[in-house]
Length: 229
Image (cartoon, rainbow, N blue to C red; front, side, top):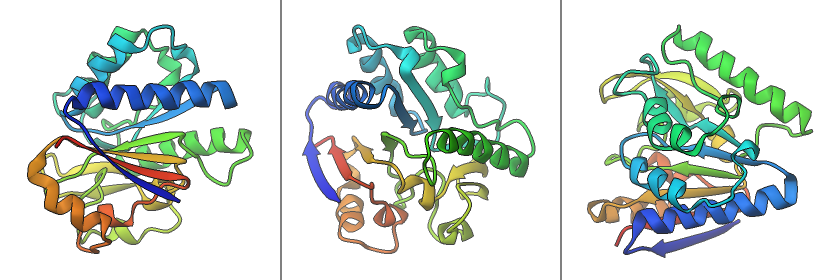
């Protein structure tokens, strides 16, 4: 497994370029690009750059998932889906069936099981042990959390389930999140860290500091850290 650190002075453009490189390679090699999106507000600029530079990318061959979701309706301002829809899916004309949305508006356990079943159906069709993203995007919290895997929560020890409901320390507290078994099944993981104030956390996570959930993330083939400094 390869680990790489990249520094960027034009974060959104460089992130979009990396995503498109993976997209074209996966589509050429396997006919499908499976991309896992990260939440929060920072992806908006990356999504805009992605739409602007995608050219003739066949969006019908891109399948989107979410690393986590807040337990709110899809039109709520805190919804990860809402931001992705506004900044990426709608502008790019992504087919609705290509977006695997976590249903934050229903019972969390039901939503988690539903999402697991949807991913399992794809992986079974492709002959995989579990769903394998071609590229999974992850942000990094001030406490070293990734997706909604926060320090100290029981979901950090989950070894079988792929998606679980969790309670986080930040509002809204009720979340759905991918777990390590699904995250680490990704062929390539790309960390987005545009904020230089997180440099010490990045350094700790890369060195394996167990205080940070990000330290336990390892792409099956490669992990890349894109840093905005």
